Length: 212
Image (cartoon, rainbow, N blue to C red; front, side, top):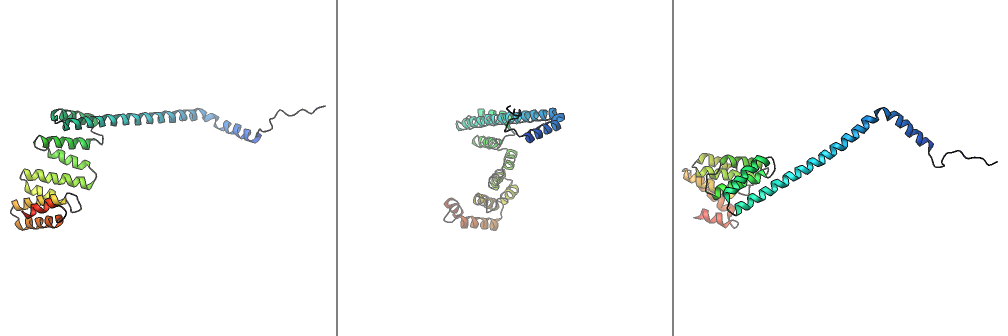
C-alpha cells in the first residue's frame, strides 16, 4: 500500500508562519489604530504635496507680476507700475520678491524726480542680508540726508560704510564734500587724500574729482 504524504508543502516554513500568526494575534487589538494611522500619514503626505504645489503656484504668480512691473518701468509707464506695486504689496508682501518691488518703487521715485521715501529705503536695506547691499543703501540714506542739508545725519550714515564695502570710495567722497560744506576743512582734506590714494591707478573718476 502506497504511503500518503502529509498535506504540507515542501517549501513551507512552518516556524515562520507560526511567527506571523503570533504577531498578528498581538497586533490585532490595535489593527484599527494602525490602519487609521497609516491613512492619516498618507493624507498628511497628500496635504503636504498639495501645499507645496500651491506655494509654488503662488510664487510663480508673484514672479509674473514682478516681470510685468519691470516691463512697465522699462516702458516708463510709471503710473501703471505704481498701481501694480500697490496691488502686489497687498497680496505678495511675504514673498522674497518684495525686496525687488521696493527697489522698483524707489527707482520710480527717482526717475520721476519725486522725494524719495526714506522709510522705504530703510525698510529695503533691512530686508537684505548681505553687508554690501546694506552698505549701498546706507550710502543712499546719507545722500538723501545730504540733499535735505541734514549734514550731521548724513555723516553718521556715511561713517557706517567701511573700507571693505564696495562703495567705500563714493561714500568717502560724499563725506569729504559734507565736511567741506560744514567748515571742517582739515577733515575734508584728509578724506579727499584717502580717496585719491585708494583710487590711484584704479578708479580714474574718483581720482580726477579729488584733483580738481
